[in-house]
Structures are given as structure tokens and as C-alpha cells.
Image (cartoon, rainbow, N blue to C red; front, top):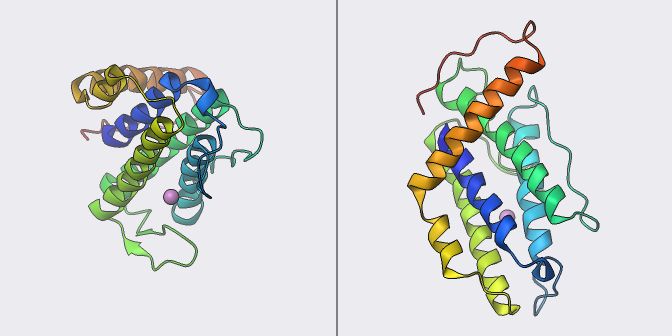
Amino acid sequence: MRIFIACDRMNQVLLEELDRAAWKAKPPGKTRTIAAIFIHMHNVRAKWIRLTAPHLKVPRQLNRTRCTPKQASAGLAESGARCTEMLAEALDGDGRIERFLRDGWAAPWPVGVEMLCYMLSHEAHHRGQVCMLAHQLGFPLPSKVTSRLWNWERLWKECGELLSHTVESERDASPSTRSPRRPRSR
Ligand code: NI
């Protein structure tokens, strides 16, 4: 289930490369600030998990007024890891998760690849907004950043390193309580 980790890696690249002054800059009209967009992405993931996979640890919501880029990055890393777990259970798991609920008002979907596509589209939509707003606010992202976002080989490589770190730290944290995981091929 590396795909969602790669998706979060793109969010992290954006957070690293964005000019700090753009974080809370007021956009024209009534649109969200860049800070509010990242916070929304995290909070929506927390909602997906709360509604779809409440047995997983639901990430805490990020504070809308005080969240810094560093806190957003840590929050997204955590919610990204939980979403990855949820997707792994839903798509190649043991049937414990049978329905995906994207919102409280929404009709549940049987789990399947549509759920993954919905989640990826939501993230891509908001990353597009961030890139456009950065440009409009006078902090355009250099082209090396945009090409990094599309360098999937590099993203996969970085995700591979992230995954091996996560597995190692989980193993170190509680060697006796965790059951061995079967290898995942996706
Ligand atoms: Ni949204």
C-alpha cells in the first residue's frame, strides 16, 4: 500500500519547500489559507478513519488557528500512516473493514479501489489548490519542486526508506505485543 505513502510524501515535499511567509498569507476572496488547506487534509483523513476504521487509533485533529507547518507535517505523517493501515486492511485484509464512509452524511461504499481513488483525488485536488495559491500570493514554487512532485521513482524510493523505518521502530517499540505482519505486496 505504498501509493498513499507516496501521496503523503508529495504533501511533505510541498510543506518543506513552501515559503514560510505563504503559510498564513490571506488569499483573495473567501478561500482557505494554505495552512487551513493542509489542516483540512489531515482532519478529513481523521474523519475517514473515525467513520470507517474506528478500531485504529484515530489521529487528533489539528488546531485551525495555531498549527505550524512543522505540526502539520507531523500530523499528516501520522494520519497518512493510519490511512495506509486502513487501506491495507480494507483492500487486502481479512474483511474487518467492509464499508468506506467518506462523511457522516454520505452513503457508505463497499470497500474497493474506488475508496483509494477518492482519497487520492481529495489530496491531489488540495495540493493543486496549494500550488495555485502559492503562485497567486507571490510565492511561486520553483520548477525543481514541481518536477520533484512528479518524480515517482524518487518518491517510491523515499517511501521505501520511510516504510523500513516505520517497521523497524514498531518492532523496537513493542516486540511482544505485536503479531508478525504478513508482507504486503502493494
Ligand atoms: Ni476537501
